[in-house]
Figure (cartoon, helix red, strand yellow):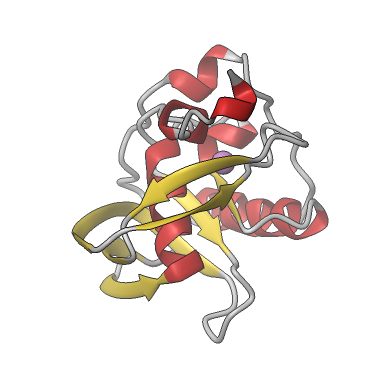
Length: 153
Ligand code: NI
């Protein structure tokens, strides 16, 4: 495993749409392992492939719950209900913290590192992470969805 450099806000690559993963090989496994290590070293709750310069639909999430590290390949949000508003940050924007409204409960359909399909439902922080990380795969950043407060005006 190896640490990868995290791309920061302002880089064009963070605005690109990622392509689906079609080959589940050692190259993908290395990417996932490296992303996991990079996320943990940076103490983040999630990391998407474009943040390490790879335009593929891959992300890792760790909200320190019972699931541990979750690997999502080709994730798709298939159900989202309710709403929650809370502080959100991103490893590509150190020190930035904004209020963002997200669904309260989110179900994703994804593939694991071997290509097996699964679904997973998360609430609270996990629901927020599912949304934040899948957004990255379409070039959408949390600042696009931040609630504009008077304080920032
Ligand atoms: Ni992010």
